[in-house]
Image (tube, rainbow, N blue to C red; front, side, top):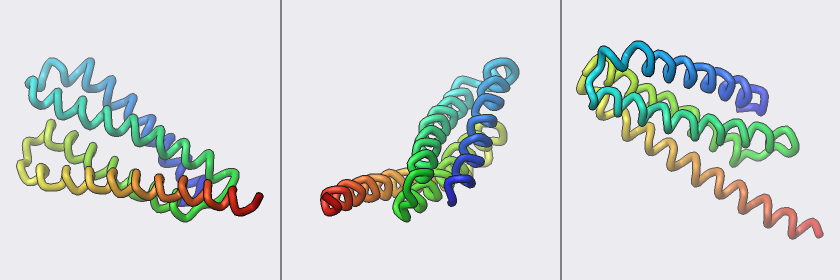
Length: 131
């Protein structure tokens, strides 16, 4: 993802985060059970955190392109779609097959954070070499 694409994804993800949160709080809270609302809340929590991470990497990428941050943002975005998306779908549809997609999204999150760490460590090494 380019920094522009990362910013666009973060903006869309932030928009849908607020929309899903409001929809869940005002409409679905009367229609869903406790378990379904918990799935919805978990999906929203993870979407919020990872949207902010993508936004931060987009800002960093404005200053200096970094292949590690590029792939980290791709994995975090994929994690949002798979993890949070599967939890939203599970809460609304009860399609049990979706429980197999959620861990794939969680794995994408983990890979994304490791890639971000790698990129950050490499930035530090690069800065020390330039001195």
